[in-house]
Image (cartoon, rainbow, N blue to C red; front, side, top):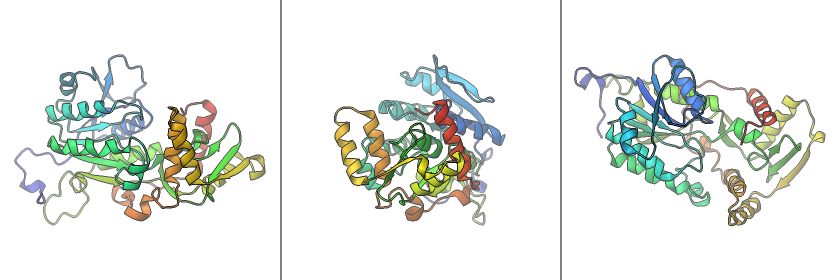
Length: 334
């Protein structure tokens, strides 16, 4: 596709995104996306929700209640929207994603932000080794087939959620005071806070859609068309996470039971346990695979990140470690 310019568009063309719809605006990451978009003051944000949903939503949102099984109901709710952002849980039926993008096409939505928000699903090793990862690419291809543009956000695992959610994630169990290091605990990965995910989507959708003309070198939404954007809060290893935990909790390593596990052996054991239908084993497998020493979790090193282009803030590790501790104590992390 040849480069388009705003100056060459028909009269009435608007070079900024204003109308954004979000599926999952009351969910773990969705609420932060919605809040950040509203705070820009540049977007009219609509939450697409089930008629019986009881999720608490951010103030400033328009609410459209729909029947997710009815494409016409979804399409009607999406009329006039320029962007559809999809956030759904791991166990959400995959066909729901297809229904949403088909409804978006019917409503003539121009952009879709698909349900990514995690590890790099364009990394062939991860797609091969983590079950259910292979469903992502067909959705992106289907979006393009429908004539819609997409832009995905790869942010790594959510830091607060992963650190505070138990030993099957980042190896920390705050309740039991245990720490499991995978291999030597020094494998760096990229990980993002929920706030940074919100910052990323708000910054992205605040960019101009097209450059004004051939002399305009400012970043635009169109430069990311049908691509994945890589963003991150921290490039950090388990040892550094644990040091942060000790600072925040005012404890020493002697106050914790520390152990080490071979990452490959841990992965294989989780794969076997998954055969019994254990969801916990899937979580263990997924997280452990990202910590293999082949560097797949460190996408910043292999692909770079767009933090500077999007103007994302630098965050304080201890601040969000503290948040993880508080979430864990409150039992807010499933």
